[in-house]
Length: 557
Image (cartoon, rainbow, N blue to C red; front, side):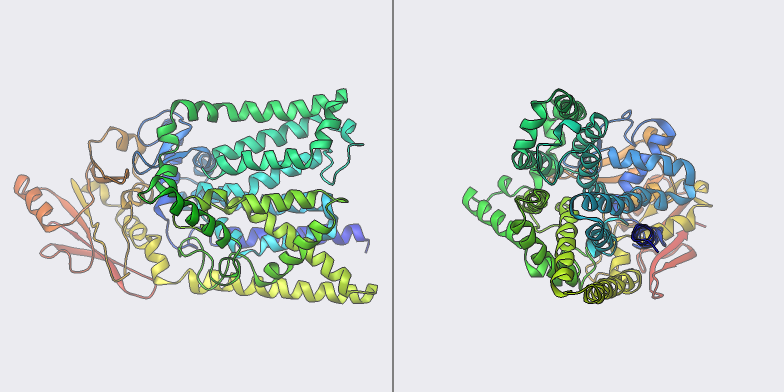
């Protein structure tokens, strides 16, 4: 079998593996739907049905999610729209996660192409395999959140630069061979990153400035040649054209666009500038700590399965070797300096916000880790394999370690973590299941009261639960837009939706007492926590995977 065919077989197998890990049981692993996913999914459903978001704004660039301090760019929601159209109202959870899974698989393919063009096809295979099995990337690719796009945007843009014959390895002799169309695509994709997640609005400009410095001689060479100048000019023009609406938004709607960023910024709290700066530096360093990368990972259960770091142990070890090789070979291959700049810049946004290090705010740097680890793996095989046979056995040993590490992570992700009761609670699987249970009869009731009770014993969780209600039934978007709503703005800048149409987001006794005094004959349904409601007709229960009752469903006689 020729070496070319071996490489083709290997990359096809890796892409298939990545697809299986990202699409398998996507509807229920993670179990349920987090409210951050639900808001994207329902705005996409509303856009499909009405051409407006759920608040009635027509095709906005920025979506209001959970209050005046929670505005999000709409790109991810719009990517969901075609999946809603194809899969229908019965599969809104699956459709909400499909763009993340698809972009995750595409990122694996892009990493292979990019690294193959800069460090050879063997290194490209290692990079693709490590990204396919990365615990960090696996979780991102199965989470319907806008941050999941960031890991693929930069690597995709760099891949198009390689297609445009930009000399990523260095050297000005090829700048006269540049191709305008792929370079234009690269510039557009770089700017498209600004519409994915707020962290990219700091990372992308910083990364482009670093890249311009690293390739300053190549830029000068391209500008001195007419064909090269046209190709480079096309890239810059596409970059600025796509970025222009975001720049306009920053100038005209800064308060909305940056409300969430300002709320979580370390430099907008009550501490002094010096204390905030020290915390920021500490958090930046934490993004490179063994605890974060190898042993514990993100503190938030929904963002990182506990018991693992953001990287596999094998990738973490090889990363150090790859960084050394990139520095050593910086004059022969400047793409190594590019990936090091990527690695050093990726934590910028997460470092200046609270709760750092943060898996979503720093996700843009994920491919850089795999790229350097792949360089390290290739270097290790060459170093230890003093003969062809020894190289082969060294490569097999590395492959077995990477595969074993990935198998353990995947087994735990689809097993222990996805079945954990607290994970199910955080993703509000119980509320999703309750809404699915009442779906056939919900239209028969004048009022539907849904519990907002918070449990301190970690049996259940209620966070922006109305979004789960909207997407799980689902509520017809035109109805939600026209219904009268009771919404309370909290001091935090988030809101609390108390009621909309027939739905009341509480089963507190004082609210029920007042409601039935005003309308004693109303036909009502109650979706309540155990022991919260008595004296009505029990029609069903909703249990967690371990059999614990999470909701009891009652109706008036």
